[in-house]
Amino acid sequence: MDDDNETYILLLLSDSNLPTGSFVASSGLESYVKHGFASTPATTTVTFVQDSLAAYAHSALPFVSDAHRIVEELRRSECLRLVEERKNAGHFSARDKALSSLAALDNLYDTMTLNHVARRASRSQGVALLTLYSKGFSRPSALPAVIPDTEKDDNGMSDLLEKFKLMARKEETPAHLPVCWGALTAALGLSLERSQYLHLFLHARSLLSASVRLNDIGPYLAQQLLMHVVRPLVKSEAARCKDLRTGLLKDSQTDFDEKIHGPANTWPLGEILAARHDLQHSRIFNS
Image 1 (cartoon, rainbow, N blue to C red):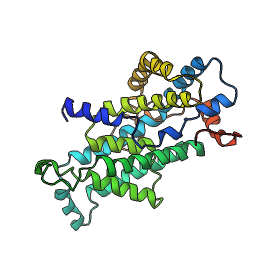
Image 2: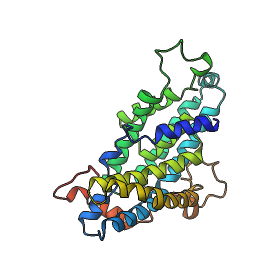
Image 3: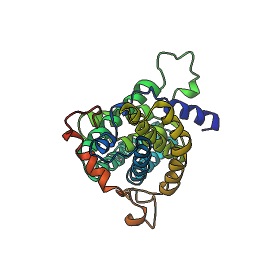
Image 4: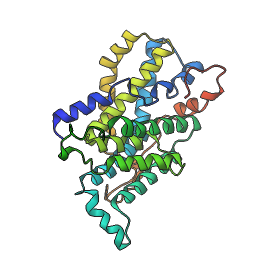
């Protein structure tokens, strides 16, 4: 994909009006404040964003990367119609293998997400992303005269993500946010590096939005923090964690060491506080 197309996709995905469910999740910030860890509002928000972003990058980015790679490889394959012949020979189709690999990633992330509140929010936002692709980003079939024939075929990406969403509806896979994000951005043709960076940026932006909704900071201060504070944090965490992998894809790293290259939880306190979200007497967010 050329730079202009990638830039356009980035603009679409960074739209705060996208129905992804992120506005109902504080990622533990509400519980963090209610449990008395707040100091001055701005300092509290910056500290939480820094710790949460680092933890999220180490735990979620490996799954984003591997899911992106699975779908990107499928997308780059000649055409799904050509490999469908393998089914007649008793083999899985390329799409079936991709779905199986995505489900394996999904189940591993579900296992590694220790608290039920974070799992609930991640599943909700993941399914919302899959729905977004099928209803908002897939090519419209009602405009055959407008869309050139060469652009009608999306190499089966719509079918792949629709089947993955169906698996989630049947509770055959959890459809967690990082896995769905990696699959979605690869299906749209976004590069892995930009997918990783944008995912971390959106996580940080959602935390600032939650802080505004909690009335800890105002919208102008949130924009100042996003401009001057969050930018270097996102950049450093993206650079630090860009090569992390889950280890499920055997050919992803020949020298894979799970202690060095694998996902990890780096902020136990944040995990505990997020797990206590439902114990609050009153709540603004679902998580």
